[in-house]
Structures are given as structure tokens and as C-alpha cells.
Length: 235
Image (cartoon, rainbow, N blue to C red; front, side):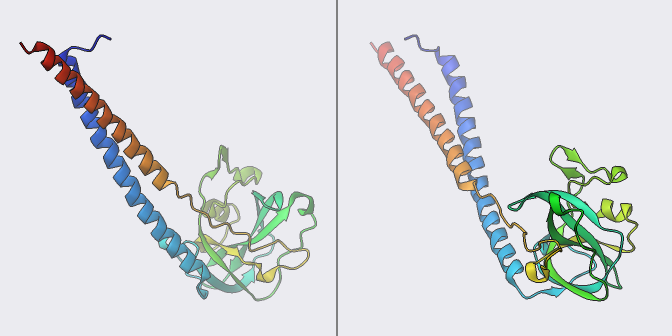
């Protein structure tokens, strides 16, 4: 087999060395991401199972999935249905604005199937208390589907867009996913929040380290070829 000339092997060695370093760096980065993801999962588990706190007027990313409680009155006639697919089948999330007195909070009261959409009962009247998880807004729309406020077609729970379309006063920049405590016949099914985080970082890290190992193997093969050439040049 014809081996590449020495100059070409030198450039190949430089390239393989650079690639090996890059792959190792990517592997280390994935391990760091894994530690971050595990810390995030632990924090979310703690928030989602803690005693509920009063719903705040604003929220940060670190508040996602915190258990909260809000008291107020539902604003009639301003319900929004957002298309959804759950373990119960295709249907809609039922979002209703709750006037807390200080701000208006969009409450995802739960899921209703397509067949039961028209039979859905109105929101409760009078003062109510809702408990659930604080969820960050979902702007722009769903996968390959944009919200269309003019046609009242919604594919994501975009708080700002829904608040504008429904002319909600003082809207909070997040929504509340209601738990199952208020589930009654004829009402949406709450408590369907899915808390799931992908954790493939170790697989990715091992893949990058494996690529680095292949580069090191390639360097060893180049060195073997160089040593063979040197032996062949010896008198």
C-alpha cells in the first residue's frame, strides 16, 4: 500500500491533533452540561413538590414549575383554547384569565378533548382559588405552526399574544398550570403537566471522547508509518 509522503503525514498529524483536542473539549463540555442538567432537574423537583406560594406579578426563569396559588375571579367570555396532544388524546388546553385584583393571570384549567369542546361548562363564578405550577410563556407558536390570533387559532400558550387578543388588563408574563384538585365533571382535566428533561449528555460525551480516541489512533498509525520510513532509510 502506498503511504502518503512525509510532508502530507505531518499536516495530517497536525489536523488529527487539533481534532482530538476539539473532541476532548466537547466531551468535557457535555459533562459540564450533564451536571447543570442534573442540578436543574433537582431544583424543578423541589419547586414542583413544595408548598404553594402566592402567585407573583412577575416571574423569572428560575421560577419555572414552582407551585403557586392564586385567588380571584375568572373573567367571563375570554377563554382561549390552545391545541394540545396529551395521553388523553388530541384536544385543547383551556386557558381562562383570572383577575386577582393586582394583575390578571392566565390559568390553564386543564385539557378537554375535541369531542367535548362544545359541551365544556363555563368558568366558575365568584371568588375561586387555583393551585398549580408556574409555567413560562411559550412565544411564537408550536412546531412548524404559528399562532393566528386573528383567526383565534392557537398552538402554544403565548401569554403576551393571548393577553393582547383578549384585551386582558395588567397580565402576568406567565401562566398557571392548574393541578387536579379542581377536577369535576364537565370541566377541563387539570394536573396533566409533564415534567420531563432529556439527559443524553453522557452519551454525547462518550461519543466525543470516542472520536478523540480515533484521532489518537490515527496519530499512532502515522507515527508507525514514520518509524517504518526511518528504518527503511537507515544504512
